[in-house]
Length: 549
Ligand code: 4UV
Image (cartoon, rainbow, N blue to C red):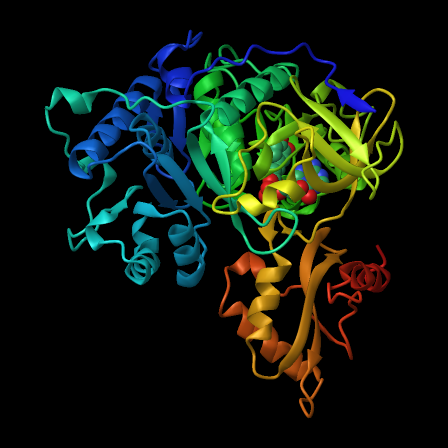
């Protein structure tokens, strides 16, 4: 059967993101309301400042960099309030943003920047050395590396994004027109169901649709852009990284659309987060499960008054009912859940806070304009209560993987459903439950780890004959961690010391979230089917037994 959203369809306007957010917005809030606030320095952008800073940057791109429709800007930065004008200015100038994890190594960054053919990179001073090395490797001139954030380049070589000068040429002062349905706005990277990270092509319409779908779903959770104790309305902790699709749509875009305040932190530190919640009277936060765990269990939380929080929303990785209960018992704060993927821009399911206690463990119903199927391995449609792969269809579903048209036939069904690679079911009321994952992906703290990438690195080691990486489960921290099963070449010792040496060796080559935190297990043979495909499920089952999942 086809599951249809129980919410009335929304009219999705055929406009680009800039026009939606900055030109046709009937705002309820005043122009001087601060939208993005830097949690560390208190500096902020209100709507008017955000719009003018973004416009200046967009004009600077056109004047100084001869920016054309479809040109791609790499953004390699932790959360900063400057992320917003850089993204929206690039979109105004007809550009596309390729957003990268700020903890990437030179190699990882160079891979993404080359794959998405960036014309320049916006970064912060602390990441400048990595950005410069990556740029050099792929032939991007040094003057195309610009800075965002509070720090300036002491050598003066790299301009701050606000210093890009625009000429007074009239032709450069107009927004570059795009076709919202076809033209891309973002390239976010995901490994999809298999293999290495790939550029997920998100069009303007994909994002416009998801902002409206998401905004409409969240209105049911009682958010207001005005009012509250200080008249400033609801406020969120913006700790989800903006480079990741969850933070990109649900915070960076939704803040401008809905007029809530976002208090931005460059990285998550529990104590800082608690202090900001208390000081700013934060009312909601989108976070992954490990942060929920911190709120539920960490002693530091007791030092702060978190009573302003109306709810937390967990997403990006599985959340247990026990954790939802633990937060409630300790703080009397409801934890609701959402679900989505990079490929769906991202939200497809969202629980309302009215239903969190009734349907714990559920990711909620389909959002407006969405349909889903649950199918078995042969593609047969299943019905209520039956577990199978979840397929979804809607205006937020992406345009395919960059430079990989051959993947379309495995990614989409004949009638245009996107195959999520996640396993789950719907109950009779339309609430979905994610129960397992068919695809290879590992989620560490909500961040993607592609097993194929780690296997590629391991196979490059002279002592390793074969490798398979799967998700293991750290019970204490309640999270997935990558574990490697290795076949060693003859004569290589299979000892704890060797395992530690290899774990450190991998750590020196990858961003911190990809480290082999689940350890290494030595085996005689990687299980494979007759055609040589790795049978990951066999090792996943073995890991489940070992980890008592
Ligand atoms: O591509 P990605 O890294 O994307 C995300 C998106 C997370 C979102 C988006 C909107 C929300 O409102 C929200 O709450 C969370 O993480 O990874 C996609 C994969 O992450 C797993 C699942 O395997 C996806 O295919 N995943 C995402 N959310 C959940 C989840 C969840 N609630 N429970 C279990 N797994």
